Image (cartoon, rainbow, N blue to C red; front, side):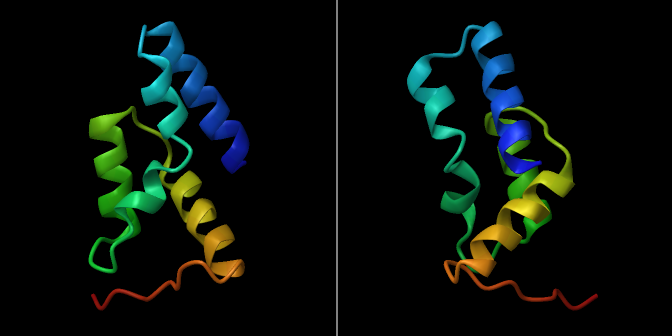
Length: 79
């Protein structure tokens, strides 16, 4: 799911004429926004503004994969 969404987004960016360096940075971009202060929704919104919109489920899955690998930890946000 995550790989497909990122590949589709990269293809769309290429069709829109975005430069290759920007397209290549998309795969890592969500992780760069993960600073312990931003929620997954905040990161989703930042990526939508800087790159292009993608479903929130992509980011949830993306960070679950990273959490499973021990790269990040996920915290519940108090409501």
